[in-house]
Length: 453
Image 1 (cartoon, rainbow, N blue to C red):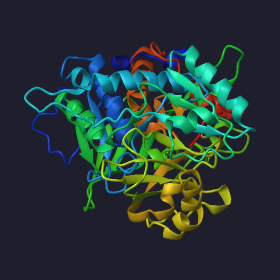
Image 2: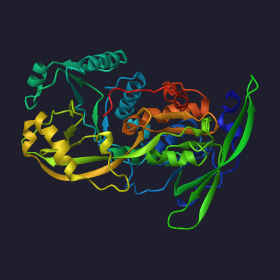
Image 3: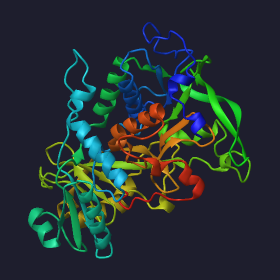
């Protein structure tokens, strides 16, 4: 595959393309890199690509997003958390870099003559609770986190009760608490900051839906004589919104950052639909999963120092502003996964599944009152719930950044930087994310994260 890992500039279509003077509704005829998906991941990748090519027109990047109002976007419908409490070193490293990035966000994403960026970060941290059966795993996870430089404390039930008097510690054997670089922030502000900065650097924003990827087949003979049928995407076909008009973009590289809908994009080049017993038979195992978030009021609830609490049952909550407001939820059991055809909220799910768990852990919540709710999509990796990042082995210019299963927002600064390195340099330089490559799907090797929420 080394033959195909050229620098992007060696495979560019070449033109005097400029983002200036082009309608925001129509993409250019040619681009070096087309990013499918204008959520947080797509715009982070676009930003880091342009950071590597400071000349405004040196690298022509187009981001295609079908819903620029972001009415159903996973990014803006998330709860905005960031944590370092993972079990995989790569996840910890990504979140630590993202925390650094967010702390210095105006140095990275500030735009001249625009107001400073305030993502409204709340540094209250995460608090994970573990039963007796899970205590040893929690302790092992904390050891890994500390080895990666994270500041995490372990708390006994007595210490928990002293620090959080409102907490019922029944069934809790151990807890871990993030002391720095953890908390929550406003996802919409971060998305807009990435987008505004990238556009100011010359990235072209296109509104439309990708309907097809037109590729050319190539044959590679390996040193041992094996013949591989490779393909290279040459054009991205885009359907203009509210119109029968389509546009076709000639390109050198395509990035699939389509989130919950990225499997559909992969199928456009035969991934998952190929002949039996071939690599193309293996699908991109990412599908949309609907998750509910509920907002409630409890005037006498936990105070300003309360963290993002992850219960032993998987239920979670955090404060939402001030004045006794909170939000939270629970991932449903596999057999209870809701219909994804719409973003309607199941209010009975809160009453029957979420509230009893929260009220048991925080007795003050027995008298809460639900104020509002929403639903959003996870780009859920059914194989191992970890992301798919990097190049496809047979579609030689198609890169993935998807399948984050709810962690994409907090990992987006690190993933954007890493994927820009992989595209432009052919290898990772800051954080090695090779563990998340498509190759593991072929080998059947799962990248299992033990701290999934």
